[in-house]
Image 1 (tube, rainbow, N blue to C red):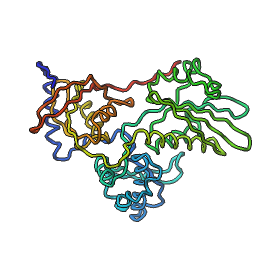
Image 2: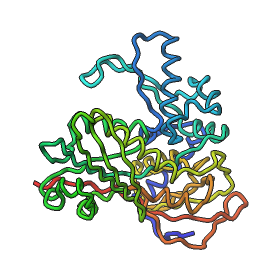
Image 3: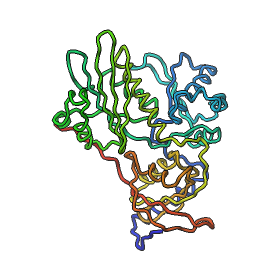
Image 4: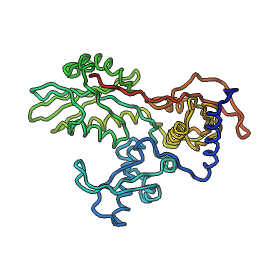
Length: 374
C-alpha cells in the first residue's frame, strides 16, 4: 500500500471531515444520487391517483430494466415478473412534471434504488449490462435526393436519435460541426463509405466509439441507412430503413444498443461475487471530490458493498466486492470517459479485516470538454 509521510493543515482538516463522513455511513447518510439516468424513467399520466401511480411505477421499471439489461424484451422475461409486480418496492423518489413544449401532457418521473435493484436483478438471474457505458460520437450524413448534409443537433430527427439512446441507457453525442470538423470531413465521405476522415476528426471529442451513418432517401421507398461502428479494434455494420428518417434513426440506435450490450454484458446473469479488493484513488483533495467518487463507485455495476476504508492525504481508499473478473471490473471503472484513470498495476496487498486484499490504483480526473471553434 502506498503511503505519504507528510500532512498539511488543509489535508488534516480534509481527513477529519472524511472520517466524520464515514462515521455517518452506517446511519444511512446519502450524499449523492446516481450520476446518470439509468435508474430514472418518465411515464405519461392523466391524474395523481394511487392506482394510476402504481401502474406508472411498473411501466417506469419496465423502461429501467431495458436500460440495465440491454435487452429490449427484458420486461417480458419471466424472471422479471416478481420485480415488476412489486415495482414500488424499489422506488426511492418520484415527482410530477407539468406539460412542456416537448411533452404536451403530465409526466411522472420515477427514480429507483440503484444498488438494491442491481442485487435483485442478479438474484433473478437477469443479465446486467455493466456501467459506465461507452460514449458514442455519431456522425450522420443525409442525402435526401437534393441536398447532402450532416444531421445537426436541434433537428427533430436528431432529438429522436439522442432520446432513443437515452432510453436504452447510452450516451450518444453529435459533433459540433464547426469549422474544424467541416474542414476534416464532408457528408460525401460518409455517404461513400470513406470513414478515415471521420475517425480522425473524432479524436478531439475523445469518445469510446465512433458511429458513422449514411442516410439516403429512395423516393417513395423511404429511407435506408448504413451504419458503421468503430469500437476499439472492431468494426460492426448494420442497416435500417423506414418511411421517415426519424424512424430509421431510432431503429439504428436500438441496434447499436443491442450490439453493445451483447458484446459487453456477461453471458450469465448470475455474476458471482467472489473477490474483495481495495480501490485506492489519488487526487481526492476535497469533500466534493470524495462525494463524487463514492457515488461513482456505488453506481458501478461491477461492484457491490462499496464502503469507505481509509483516507490519506490526497487519497481515498474504498473496499468493495467485485462481481465477475476483477481485471474486467478495473477496465470498466477506468474506461468510457469516466472520472478515473488507471495507474500501473502492482502486486501489493493490504491486510483488511483479517484478510490480505489486492489493491487497484487510480487517479481522479475530470472528463475533458470540447470547446467549439469560432
